[in-house]
Length: 543
Image 1 (cartoon, rainbow, N blue to C red):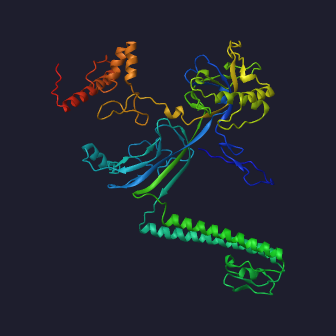
Image 2 (image 1 turned 90 degrees about the horizontal axis):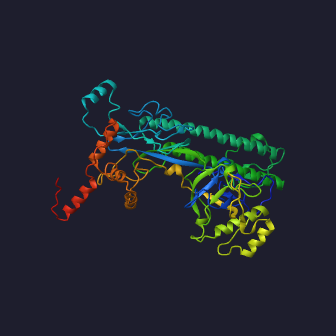
């Protein structure tokens, strides 16, 4: 998730213990805020909100009310295999230049690149087991060298529904040491120490300049170090030279510098801040030295770990899942233009239309309470925090709706956006707090043309990750039988499923434009035969 924090206090504000200082992407005034308040009507709308479906206004999408930013992390490990180490590279065998144009020398996609399904995110090659090369391969190796022959492509590619932009990438690696690496490491460490020593010097110079401003023309009262040795002698006037002679300011005691008590406090604070800065720098130096000499800590057998972060912006669309706070979840079935949505007497169109049939059987009446109270609260400019099992009574709600000038129980007549006519019955209208859930259509939508089959049953695999097919279960078969759709059913139970010969012939016929062949025996029949044989039955198939 994209985490953005912004301060809600200003310079000069007086703050108290426990006060909220900043707001995040999902908080408001220190409270969790995951959704948005929306004007809702409980009524059917042309059948589009049947069975928990939701109809929303185009305004919701246009004003980015439920637009979210998602950041996905994709990682790839580089291992040391028996055949040799794997390698991150942009030089991948049998891959076009077009496919690798966005990869750097480590095979990682550049920051800012747009990603589409099938794009290479991290390029990796892995050693291939030696097999006897064919004469053609031998010839190619003789001409072009044998690099392409002994490695295979093991790159990480974007999944079928991935669209986004690369916003960050990281490469973690263990240092592999040989003679050349050791001498390089020595040079790097020396350069690092030199750069840090100049930073320490700079810090010390700043301290001395500030100290001299404070102690100029003052007489020393004898400044000592931790061991009790006098560093700045007593009775001498402070000079710039005298301050420069002191080697280490981190070991000075909080001693008496001058006769001025307030000035001594300022000096103590200055030296204390200097110590903190020096400690920070030393910590950074230690960490950078460790990174050069040891590298990153990775699990055993893993040499490198590459990570790519991809961000995508998602607007609310048909198929996305939404919910209120009472288990009233549903799927967006239609996004309607604002002018076609039902509107109130004053012309205000509603943002969302929910089906009233979702309330009585489930008995989650809380959503109706919320709807009415929300509308009253919006009119009065108040928020209502309702404890569980201790909600507002009917009398309180009536009192609040009267105060706000809202129809009692939110019952009001709506007008059809299409014709402008008033609907026959009054509907419950109000304000409800809706949330967009993580189940989004972009992650779930999937279709299969051809794909992998299970080795045992010879039926297509299931699920999006395996590029699987849609399961036709018992009940679906009954439905097709009830319709009398025999040709469709026969196809689904044979050539589209586990009739191995039949599906190959059918594919061929489609490619060549020939008439469809007759289906053969499905593999499930053979499985049944083998099972019966396993029970000791002598069973044979005769023509």
